[in-house]
Amino acid sequence: MRVILIIVFAMLSLGSCKRKDNSSAAKKSDTNAKIGTVKKMHGVLSASNVITVSTDFPNDTIYPARILTSGGVFHEDEVDPKSSTYKWKGIFKSGSGYYINDTELKLSRDHDAIMDDDGKKTGWMITTSIKDTSILLISGLDYLQDRQVSQIKLSKDQLLPGEKEQFTYKDVIYTLYATGDKKLEKPGNKDFIVSNYRLFLKAAGNGQSYNQLLVSVSNFDGTITSILFAGDIDGDNIPDFIIDTTNNYDAEAPTLYLSKPASNGKLLKVMGKHIAVGC
Image (cartoon, rainbow, N blue to C red):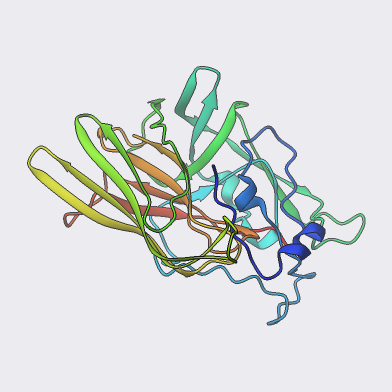
């Protein structure tokens, strides 16, 4: 059962907003789809209306790859207008499973329900030349090959502090585990408030062991780190991950972790991150 976190403004979320989805792309979970009433109104940014998305790690602003998702309307400043001129690979889901393939990317203007007055279209809609469901779009990594990708099925995609998820891949035992502080929102309630959160990946096999920090977040605002996809994306027989690293209920931050470019005793390296807010 997925974790629902309580926030001070939970009741206000009934009148909230999120990215408009006009496609068959996979939906976010109820936890990550919770939206608040904070708004970025018509480009006027102030302390009262800026949505803050902060993650202690990963927190770089420049990564080796560009990544995007499709299936909704993005605010104008969330997509590079030159994106359609880049070479893209996509991770797609079909009826027979997941695969990587070259794809063309098309940008078109659409009405941004938050930023635009009636009749205006400043938002970006992203579509691909492949009609299967797009999981992630990746540009800038020449070593990604067109291939089938076996999904590693996890029993849960969110881990509270003290919880773990163990799986075996290619005879190596992997363990995802979370640390941090959690407390009941109120006595008798099953909902938690989480802080000082850390998500790790541990591996042991072939005489070697690893223990790597994947995500650290000091405080969450109505959401919790979510594992969107696990599988060998780059073809080196080591699991890769797409993780939503946002700390804000009104934002999405799919982050790509690949094993092939990792170095210095690490299992994974952060290759790209894309932040998009709902309001």
